[in-house]
Amino acid sequence: MEPEAARTDIESTKAAAPAGVTSSVAVRAVLAASPELSSEPQPAVLPESSESPEPQSPELSKSSESLKSPKSSAIREIEARGRFVLPGLIDIHCDAIEKEIQPRPNTLLPLEMALLEFERKLPVHGITTMYHSVSLGVGISLRGDHLLTGIIELIHRYRSRRAMVRHGVHLRYEVSHLDGLPIVERYIADRKIDYLSYMDHSPGQGQYREPGSFERYVMKNQGVDVVEVRGIVDDLLTRQKRVDWTQLRSLARLAAQQGIAVASHDDDTPQRVDQFASYGVSVSEFPINLETAHHARRSGMRVCVGAPNVVRGASHDRNLRAVDAIADGAASIICSDYYPGALLPAAFKLADEQVVPLPAAVRMVTLHPAEALGVGAVRGSIEPGKQADLIIVDCFDGYPGATHTIVDGVVVYESGMYWSAP
Ligand SMILES: [Zn+2]
Image (cartoon, rainbow, N blue to C red):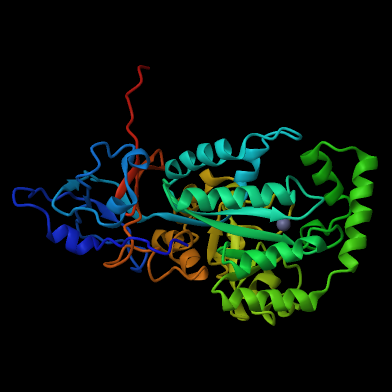
C-alpha cells in the first residue's frame, strides 16, 4: 500500500525512554497476538517527533521524512490506566466514501472535500487502515466510471503526500459491467488497487435472491420509479448473461501475480464458492448462509461479515446473521461494510455477549484483515518491528470509544470528555 511505510519498534522505543520518566502506567493491554488478556501492567509509550510541535494536527505539520524516522529522543507517555490498548483497526470493506460523495440521490459533492472530510472521521472510530470500497458497475448506487477513477486518483495523490490514516483501494467490480473490464485490468497492471472483489448484484441470486428485493433497494437508494427500475433490471439481466467467466479467472490470476487479494461477494451456494476458489479467490465477503460460509472456510478462504450486522444482530436483508457465523467459527473477519462507527462496537459486543473472548474479537478487525490483504507482517498486532498503529479505548457504560488513535507512532486523534452539568 505504502511502498516506504515507516516502522516503529515499540519495544526499543520504550527502552529509549529518557531517564527521569519512571512512572509505570497501568493499562489493560489487549494484544491481538496473545490468546488472553494481558494482566501485566504495561506502559503506553509513544515516540513524539521533535519536528511536530502540535501532535493534534500531524497531518498539517508532518513532513514525510519525520513520519519515516520519529525521533526517539522525545518520548511521550500517555496515561492509559483502566483502558484498552489495541492495534489500530483495519477495515477491508467500507463503501461509506460513496455516501460521502453522494449523500442524497443526484447530489454529488466535490470528491476532494468528500475524501478529506471522510478521512477525519476514521481515526475517531479507531480505524487506522481503510480500504475504501469503490464500485465499478452500473445499475447500483453511485458507480459511474469517471467517479471511480477520480476517487482512486485522489486517494493516490493524498496517500503519498499526507494522510491521517493509511488509505487503500478496494475495487469492487460488478461483473455484468462488461465495459469496465479493461479499467480493472489497467488498475491491476499498474498496481493502483490493493484489493479486488467480484460482485454480481443482478436480481434473482446472491444478495437479491428474494423476488422484488433488488427493485426495492434500487428504488429507495437511487430515487427511481417502478418503470425506471424495470429498465435497470432488464438491462442487468441481459448483460449478466454475457459475462465471460474465463476472463474473470484470468483477471484474478493477474491480480495474484501483482500480490492483490481477490474476494467473492454474496456467495449463496457452495458451488459458487468452488467456482471462485478455483480462480484463486481468498476471501468470501458476506456469504448468504451458514452452509456457504463454512464451505468457504473449509476451502481455505477467509470469511468476512459486516459490523452493522453484528451490532444489529441481523442482516439488513434477512440473510446470514454475522454473529451466528462468528459463533460457529465460520467467519474470521469483520468489516464496517457501510458504517465505520460500527467496527469497534462490534468487536466489544462479541466479547460482552461472550460469543468470543475480546482478544479473538479484536483480531477479526485487526490481524485477520491484515493477513487477508497481505500486510500481516507489518500491521494488525502490537509486536516489535510492526508499524505503530495503535488505539487506546475507553468504555462508557460498556460502549467503547477511541480516546487516542496513533498511526505510525503519530497521535492523529485524541479526545477528552467534559463533565456536563445534570
Ligand atoms: Zn452485495
